Length: 403
Image: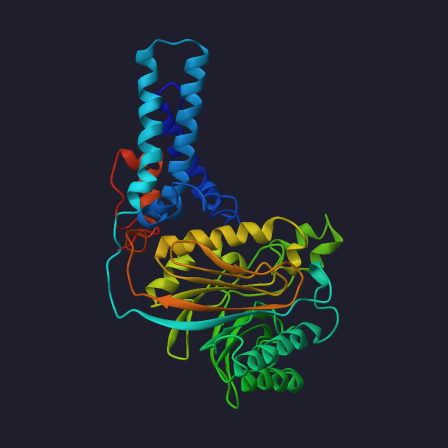
């Protein structure tokens, strides 16, 4: 690519092509480490509302390559004429971010404000054995929710309209364990509003499980259910199990989860909540589907206890901030052990928790029904930004292009 005219542009396009492939294959892909996800505090962030994370990645890589090429030519004492192209590319790219902030989203629907609480109950231990002590995780979340109800009754915090619990917040199946159902009902009754409960449910076949988010109402139980749509290879299920069993004794610890169907959105107290369970927030199409299904706010319930004390929880928070800007939607991150957070539509974190401490966040959340260009175009910018995208337009029949 370095031998072509406007080399940084072509190299950035190849980078985006590599991220696109890695985000899809093998085993459904791993888009976790895309460059754009590292830009929630950068000047290019508004570009996410124009072309989604792919455009943000492209601009960040392009600016870096252009600046690198400019430095290289300066060191080699090239003529001033040879400095113009990389300098112009770098300046124009860096200016594109602030300018993108002036592109308005398309309005739609009536704006309103609701109060949402995110409960972080904490876990008894770190790592994959976070739920080794039966019902401890659930009891922690019940206790924190009851304290939330007491604080709201005393006027110390606003009374929530709905409550978000994290992924795996009920560490045992409440549809098969009456004691778990009773505990959840107790918490829902105390707070007096619907609670989104994360749990692992055994499917009717008796062999597979689903990673589910359940809308629980006091005295009624489950009124809506959303299953994780893209399950994690080597964690929630094991691809090529017989082969990998030859390499590691940990293979048989992997689950037998199956992906769910649906658009990834549920109704809670009249609010349409889009759900991206844990690593689903890294996948463009899943979040876009939730917004297309009418999501007014995005919830990211996650069990970050399995991340331990690594940087992964902060990486996930950064992704959530990008999604807020991309779709002009507030985001509520609720984790078992931190970092939970509330995020505004412009990607700002208004409140957050510490790791491995019980806590509750209560936030007045502004709901809007706007549509960004990124929401409308979906993956079309990604197809256009690849090297072959410059030679022909993205066709309606191309995979993932919005029709």
